[in-house]
Length: 441
Ligand code: PLP
Image (tube, rainbow, N blue to C red; front, side):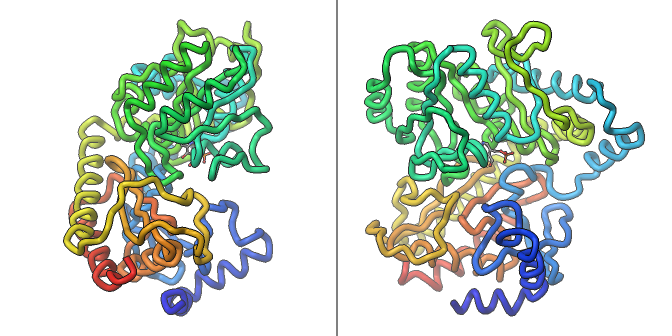
């Protein structure tokens, strides 16, 4: 309560903006995930790795727009690429050269993960929607295997394994992530020839940066192919972790891969693609295919031009640099926990962190503790025990007071503008928190 009171006093303009916005928007914004307690911070601008709030305070951005903000704020190369494209018009009503060039770059980059033919969308949600539809039509089957705490977009997410009422009406079947035995048991219950697809994130991003084991992911890949189902890997977030995509790095052979976030240079973006020999993508060929996929903004010039410029910026060297920085941050955080002898159970979060309860959790019987998950430039901070919701909120407020912005639910995605000095600042701020609240951890 004291931290929330300090936050309210320190951010009168954000509070005012929130109250004003509530007049026209339920809850004051259009993205549930952006709500934080007691009210979200509104930003006036971003520059490099810094954000400036409406109240004029500057924060180091460790959220990176949930991985879409890979390049930092107002990257000059992307600004210029969009500016130049804009001088030639943008609602042209036909295919454009940016679209073709971006498709070529995407298939060059992610061909080894299975994207040889690609279609663009406006979001990761749409990309997954189309991948599911393609699987159903391709196989003539209906069931889609998904995983507890999986997140594939605002209409395809599975907190605690339940399909939300806002979800698409598909025959989703749920299994626990990283659990081969129970996934096999689930698959064994399905009627013969009923499974259209297995849809999985190689790392559950919104579910808390939970890294899928190689064994589990290969088990899914093999099972899908044995059962004649389509193996869809959702790389909307994870494609930033490896130059040719995480699927290629893990030796997976997906039939369809979905992309989003950073690949469009930080503009509204999604894509799905597959191999040429698999003929699934041919379903979208308007000359011969069975599936229509229209969308006014699928090839919008802002995104296409931004993506073209942006992909060239994310070289193998930059990718290694940002992953190394993430490893440094994770290691620094784990050392803090070890120094203070904080129990760090290497466990899956007991609550899906996409939907953090702002209320005290009295039902959680796990032991108190704090731990870190993730890989490379994607990291999750977690708390366990009965006080986990309060500690998570307290941590968020503490880090803000230290000039660091991350998601209230503990999600961190690095951007290319961050350096070791920022990581050091993060670790120092976290150490202060841990020292102060040791008794509760
Ligand atoms: N898939 C994954 C793994 C995601 O993390 C997200 C977004 O967070 C999506 C799909 C949906 O992407 P979008 O928000 O662009 O619809």
